[in-house]
Image (cartoon, rainbow, N blue to C red; front, side, top):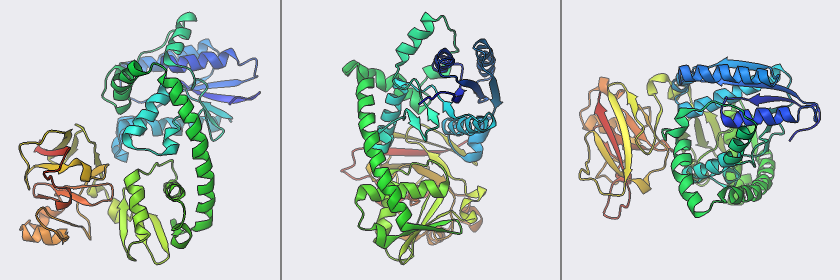
Length: 446
């Protein structure tokens, strides 16, 4: 993790974890001949509180004789621009700036203050969202021989005890006490319940992560070799040879597809289970079949699956692409506000149309998104057993031409239409007597 003479950039938020990290690395600086630098990112979210954290990070870095760089980034604006959550936008910004600063000071390592409780939370978050063996490995102690987590086996309580013993101050982020963010909900509501069943959950999770990390590395090495043997790139597209992959073990095949997604997006994109299975289903589909998975188009050619970034026409701004989360998150567009919730009780209003739609939760491939229509759209209207072109559906419903491009469509992770807002849901996701879980989406006028 650390070798003699390392130049280390420390990610410093001003919170207890990062202060403990700054202190710990300063404590061993002389022993390992380390050069230390800190960086603080002001996300421009919490106003005066964010400015307080910024000033504190500069002052405590000075106390330990560590140069500190401050970066201000408007994360809410970035999230809007990229059409992602503020949580995800903040993470992207942080790592971009960490990498830039590391390059600037010629650092050999970037240290972040992730600890044992963080690892436990991350793994439970991935369980809830859906994950494989790689995801179960959690937060790795060392990644790419560059990102290091020196506190990864230290619990939050041990960190607080250290700070108290050394009389070190830190900043409290009040938003950590709310459950507005997914991680906070896991941290504040789920983990405490689990710890009443097993107070040693951190150690058990660490042991599991170690085992699955090694197994994941083994699968990844084989998958990387198969990826190199079965793909070629041309004009920004990746061609995956069907004959070379169709007989691979399913675990290896899924790992190869994950690599394709990461390579074409040039990021550590973790393709979800349903998207991965949709790609696999193309192997035995008819030639010419195409699926769209967010920013990627996958086409079944004669001997290849062809992966490419969506056409500009499919990505244009007026075809807004916004995710609807499963519970309560509101998405606004034009004069409508969309919200959603999940229930195990059958709602009184099971409608075929209108501004509220009720679906069988277990028939939906999450995540789901809102967008406008595009060429080639079709769906299976409620009450029909066959597919219908969306333009024909609009004609039957006598929707004026000028209105058709303004009607939001709810689509699943494979871009299948679930609901034409204000008109009809898809028959494929309708509620039946065997429905156990109901997914309700409301579209209301502002």
